[in-house]
Length: 211
Image 1 (spheres, rainbow, N blue to C red):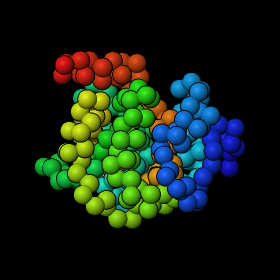
Image 2 (image 1 turned 60 degrees about the vertical axis):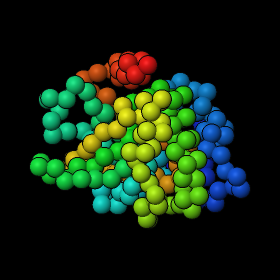
Image 3 (image 1 turned 120 degrees about the vertical axis):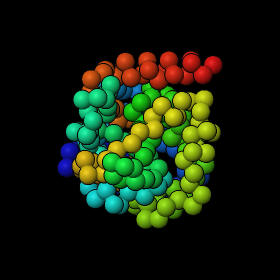
Image 4 (image 1 turned 30 degrees about the horizontal axis):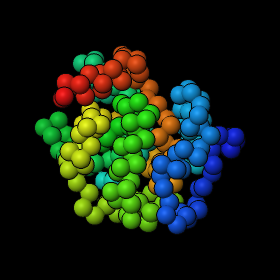
């Protein structure tokens, strides 16, 4: 296992402290003051080394999941896509083309906004997330309504990061418990066909169009 202790406070398997605060946890990480490249590299090493891959069937609404999505079915038609998403899983549905899963991908936002969105989601469902602090969710969050959540975070442009995926094309699926959120927020996307800077400009343009 690679040593990431220089940048990350490891808390795998530990119980949350009383009055755990996600914002403080994020800010306490030494990665918080590093550049995006270092953040992404170290946080991915940490998550890969400390959490196990599972099948897509283990994805539960409300859960944070990391996976690879190297070959989208319609990648030739897509303007851009993230090949290594980190997603809060919303749920699934069956279309004419087959089953699809829906989730909110953190990577479509600048870090500051990403931190704020994740903190807000955590606070809304805090009692449930604390119960699964050091283990991935086993049961769907009660009253988890992603459409309502998107409306609540409309000012941050949360709908811009809502994407759909084909389960059979997802690989290295890694459910992440609450303790991992303060590290996962430092990952960056592996955008194809567009740069990170272009993606963030699209997000900014979308926000401005709503004003």
